[in-house]
Length: 152
Image (cartoon, rainbow, N blue to C red; front, side, top):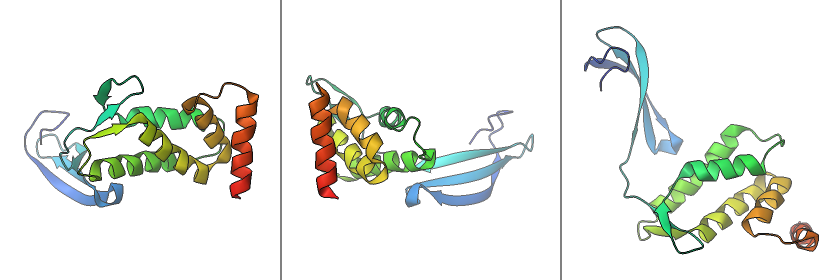
């Protein structure tokens, strides 16, 4: 691993730790040349996951899109970023660990997000559902809220 500061190719590992529930390894390193410290992460090299959009087009899976959608839904709510990051990591792990599937629809991803949001924050859930399910009027909002109340 080359040092990001001086470019030297020799570094020693100071600390190794499992992260992302054991699916990644974090290593704290020190450069032998300049003595600066830096962090590296090791992850399993996965085959790309392809997302099938509503219009039938395909694109590579991007966890940042899920995170940005969660951020918008949870705006002005007291939900820690770590919780949202954990949701994204969990969804990505579930999708990538299903070795039989190399393609997934946006509908499947959206449902997974809504399941998790329902557990975390009902307001964020309704916000996300309104965009995801394309609510057309206030009665659709009311119906969704009534469904939430029935399940309680």
